[in-house]
Image (cartoon, rainbow, N blue to C red):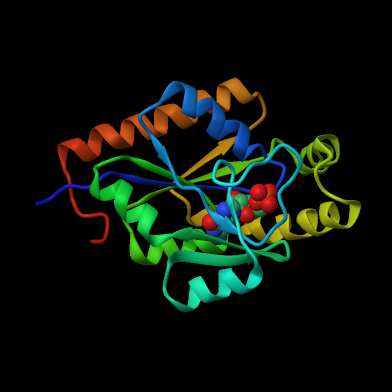
Length: 199
Ligand code: 5GP
């Protein structure tokens, strides 16, 4: 059977530290590829086009969606986000292992297409941490923080169907756990390279 790269999906509520985890893993596993999502959200200070996201208008996003350019997409905290089908297929066909950092709705869509992908959920040590981190990072207006916190209770209910859960209390420890999960999955897939799409 023709093997592809392995697909890893990382989800968790806003403020749980997914981006910091991804940065930690990027240093430890430099060969792992990342998909740059498209979003209708405005760039935050310090974010740049093509590095953090592809920032597009709502019109462009909806046209891309209509044209089937996204392997998954969802409206999250009032904005649209999507993973480019072309990027994902390119990495996997090049046999690169790929990490997607996407919300729970998008993760469900990926699960439908790629049931053998590896799904990892990031939990806060307690609910208060989310609010504290969101307020401290200061990237969202107060009403956006409120919306993200409100959405987090719904997102946390999805944790049960993920393959793995990681509690991000001490960042270095959570990075270590994520690296261990990814490395173990890559190794076992090398031994039995089944299609990502078969159940
Ligand atoms: P943020 O605005 O904080 O960068 O991201 C908000 C949420 O959107 C996070 O939960 C993040 O994981 C999710 N997200 C980022 N890119 C994508 C994507 O391509 N698809 C989906 N479904 N969610 C995404």
